[in-house]
Length: 486
Ligand SMILES: *Cc1c(COP(=O)(O)O)cnc(C)c1O
Image (cartoon, rainbow, N blue to C red; front, side, top):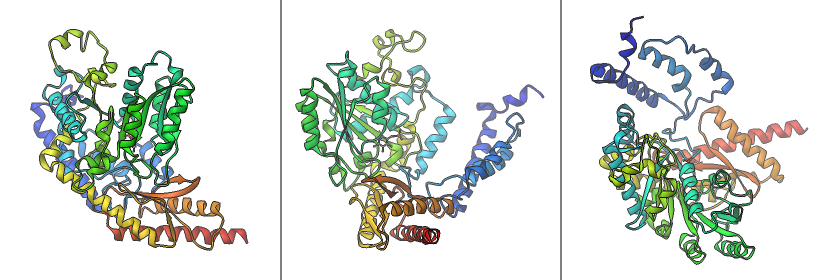
């Protein structure tokens, strides 16, 4: 084979035409697929799909992008899970806006890396503007700063690293305690482990019936902690719990954090969409008192994965993530005032994910994003009324954001374990049918089903139809179960 052939695949000024054709063909395939899908999923099983993927010989290239795209139809595109479909109601995944996808195409083609100025130039300035813009929306004040991250998990980890280093007992890790509600995200516990805290370090604070942290319990736990000679390292308030979309009482928690001189981290991975809401921004009141905030633009800003940030009130606290390497960011660059994002980040080489949000704000604007998020919150309210009026279902809490947690409860079935099985079966059967995808979780020890509504194209009619499908699958299970018992 000639040496020139592989070079024809390099993206550079000589191959511009091949680049254009290739990207356009990829976009054509995706557009055709998006228009063609009839449900969020085909229901294919791993056993049926794996042989198709396994059959690809990775040591025998096709030498042709069209052929590779044909193959991709079979290995991926035909059976992918499609978040843009109105009956995808499962996890915290949003349909994405076109300006953000355009940003994605541009950022991977230019391929800047956001660690240092000499690998990014303007990209660093754009990311900094977006951090300032978001911190302004939060109300963190003039000393705020932050950095884009790979997701809420990493943002929470870095926030707790800063909290640990700022804590007065940082030299004795076994003394440190972190307070988070029982509905907080599991990345808080994972972070505590990674940060070398003890196995009991995360104190789980009970929630009220609306799945919001009980501040009376928090106050009690904080006092107990101090009395027993431990140090409150951080309080993690969740603004939009993953399961219920509930928002902890931020002003009261901020009071308690101030009283105990403790770092306040607000995990707004989900609730950050309220920062641009035209109707419900007030639900985040109190967030401006946080020491650090997690925002996941890929949850409620209609951005592609990944797009997330950690914000801090006091930029000097980010020094705890700073290390100098002679090859990359020697101390001298600080004196020369050359902007280096790596000094604030847990990552080194890092994608220019900020460009997606930038393009979104430049094309659609914050109000456009806010209007879309308001629509899904409104839809959740309508869905809640539907569920509350339907005797077939039990619904857990009235939503503050866009999540509904409910379960099918036919009157004649009295065994809660049998109801658990019927609901678990309904979720599985629905997934296998590909008609709709819903999530599941536990509440009060029982199995529940969950709609996370992030698609403004979903209607109340879709919700009603999916509830009927769930009831049908659950009834099928209960009928079969009667047969099994007799
Ligand atoms: C999703 C979520 C996270 C984790 O974010 P990733 O982007 O998935 O890493 C953290 N906290 C909350 C409240 C979340 O909903």
